[in-house]
Image 1 (cartoon, rainbow, N blue to C red):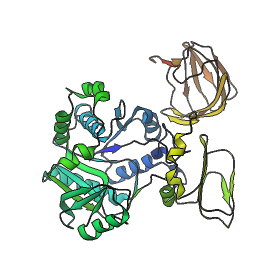
Image 2: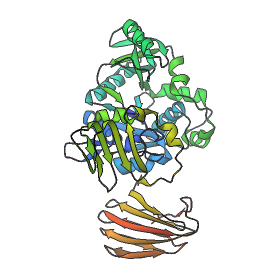
Image 3: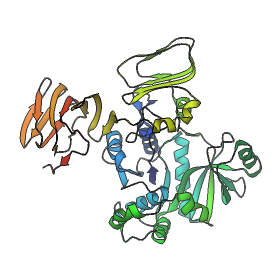
Image 4: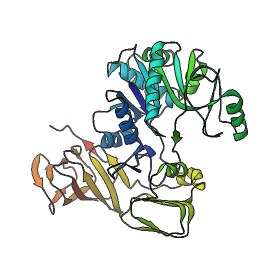
Length: 438
């Protein structure tokens, strides 16, 4: 199965655990059988592999998410990197060209596209394989998955099928209605939620891409991507296609886009260091700080604490937090990188103190800074530091000093934790020059 996972998100509705770098799909909140936690993207990747271990998985995303994807899924997953955000049609077109020209997928093969963040079980992925098989038949140019509605939702668009069979022709699409109208769609027309899941022959989208966008090949499309029209796949393709079918999916499907819906899928009331008294009802605590959280006498409340901030909110009201989060202009305090993660501990006028964690066998980029000095103090693990081509084995208690302009990197032998102190009048994330590493 060729599957493209669309990974977007601005990181606003699940603040403070998510931000512009760490979207909701990277939050490790779902408990596994072994007691560890996994994120939405790890969960859906694992589920795909359990149904089809040979599936070719490609994630269509922005540059900002590449490090988090590599951190959580490793280096083997395919990534179609969008130079900038241009909505879903350019993203899917770029991913399709990537499959054809970079991954060498035949234009006669079928491709399944779906969001990276629904909360589903394995029957969903078996349905994706059935969707692929239906696309292989070429009875229609586009095969949609229609989600059997659990209730008359106002959050989703609706697909109106020609009948109530498992696979039907599509009669029409309806924009997000009010609850009363949605109920009429469901009761009288057998309407289905449009979850943004569909399949097609690769050649079909390649043809559509060339019709709508002027480019020669994959590299040319990358170079021109910023000039591409901002348009959704639904508007550009789906609603204009006459040869289109919908496959009904009756299983569980949840869009965990807010704290209210996300906590419904949590297996436990508390993730992290938290305690609540017996009078608490329908309360969830998600705590990434090294400090305990105590909740007493609360009802229908979510408490979320991270290095970026603390949220205490009525669960229903949390759905409306985005405008308030937009007003918060603050430096991102935690991020995952391909080599590990970092957490900012203190911000001074001419200093920045960070806790850096490198995963075993991983290395930072070989780089330098023009406007700041840096000092590393090793607090856990072993590794190798390189400063201006001088190699040095490092362990707990060792100190590495780098003046401005010094080229440096570090490799972790075991999990390596450093306290990094940046010193300078102009400390900026843009003050970084990368170099080839041999």
